[in-house]
Amino acid sequence: MIAQSIGVNLFMILISLLPPYLTKILIDNVYPNQDEHLLYIVLILTVLISIFSGFISFINGYFVHNLNMRLALKTGLEFYRHIGTLNFSFFDQRKVGEIMSRESDALSSISGVLVIINTAFQSLFTLLIFPPILIYINWKLALLSIAVLPIDVIMSWYMSKFSANRTRILAEKSAEVSAKRIEYISGIRTIQALGIENFIFGRIKNLTVETAGIRLNTYAWQGTASFFLSSAHAVGAFIYSIYGWIQILSGHLTLGSYLAFTAYVGYLSAPMQGMMSLLINYREVLVHIQRFTDIYDLRPNIYNDPKLDPLIITKGSIVFNQVTFAYKDELVLKNISLAFQAGCITAVVGKSGNGKTTLVQLIPRLYDPQAGTITIDNQKIEQVSLSSLRKQIGFVQQDPFLFYGTIKENIAIGRTQCPMWRIEEAAKIADAHEFIQALSEGYDTQVGERGVQLSQGQKQRVVLARAVLLNAPILILDEATSALDTESERKIYTALGKERTDYTTIIISHRLSTIKNAHQIVVIDENTIVEQGTHAELMKLNKVYYSLYGMAEETES
Ligand code: ADP
Ligand code: MG
Image (cartoon, rainbow, N blue to C red):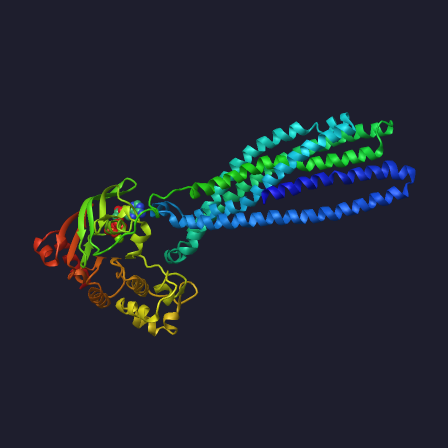
């Protein structure tokens, strides 16, 4: 496609050689000789050329648009596919708005790439053909007309460096502005509740004003440079016209040749400027593309390797062997050895910030440990395919997340077809069926921005139903019922206990009374497991669990 486009462009340049030559014939031959026959030929040729080049430019426009569209479509989609493969650790460090602005900047630059390639070829070709023609017509005039060229080149070179630098700064600033704006809108409830609208808005305003300032300053410099250039061009044209007309008046040059010459010089100035702005543009485009590929080229450490065998779960026992994990430098888990028995409910307890969430996130490989191994039914989790691992783990995270859509869609998300009775059954186990039915549109109620606002506890139950429906051999509930009342929570755990007798279930909970009946309770404190056993055993120990339980009793009563 790009080759076609370039080919068409070159062809157009060749055609554009004709009209000035025809004008020269009109002035130098038709007019002095009163040659009517030649007049008609020339005029008909002129109109045919116009029509033909209109057609060619339409075709070329289509090529370029088509290519642009396909390139943009592919890049945009590939980018989002790629984002889906990146690890939690990536998203820990990036803001949504920043990522999005890198993508949109790059997309708008892509059309720039095509223009650059096209212009480069077109200009090069023009610069190769026209100067010899000019020199052929009148070499002195030709040299005069291109005398300003070196100024152009030098100026453009410096401008391009300057612009690239500014583009980078501006792209970074705009990414920050866009991240802050998204944060402002998505966090507006917290912002308003804290009454800090003005403070947060002020930060956005400062940044936006600063960015606008840089942008304006950049325009000013670029404008100054092009003003300087155009002045140089005007002076150049002045000298060249004087010389040209003196030549005509003294009879050394025909008027037709001079006019054709001027037309060709005119043709030359566009590609010249094209080349110059190309110098500037290509660096700007490179900056955007670089910022895009910074993310696009990231290779996640944890990825789905199709060569690996799928995880085969027969029982579902999970074993941690000497597992150590740190976020960056902060050690969170140290030498953890632990078994989650198949068919059992294991509760993980401990003070907030002690690494409970971190521990369970290692099982579906949301993060990989720095040392140690984790096996499921004796298969190392990093040696089985990631998709098979994650598909067999139901994971309810601390913050319930609902997609825009109906409650039904939210529970059955990821499935194309799911019978209604199974959705309802899952909702019943999650103690969500009753409240969903009480909604005016039941399971078809829209949730999210334009729909019904659910309470935190209701959201948690919908998300729980989603995990129950999965019916996965391994189920992890990370404070999944923290916003529910004790009674509802107990109801859920009783139902789950009945449902999951053959499966492995891990529950993280702050409300210790609800996990009293777990087969095994694991207590985490200061990066490691300090106690392990049943409720009765741990109470007898009279240490960490005992005191946690005591505190829990106090807060609950
Ligand atoms: P818990 O679930 O027991 O409250 P977490 O596992 O969430 O504890 O956190 C354990 C520790 O790891 C905390 O000190 C927390 O600050 C830190 N931490 C948690 N998530 C991240 C993260 N994504 N990046 C860096 N540090 C984290
Ligand atoms: Mg947690």
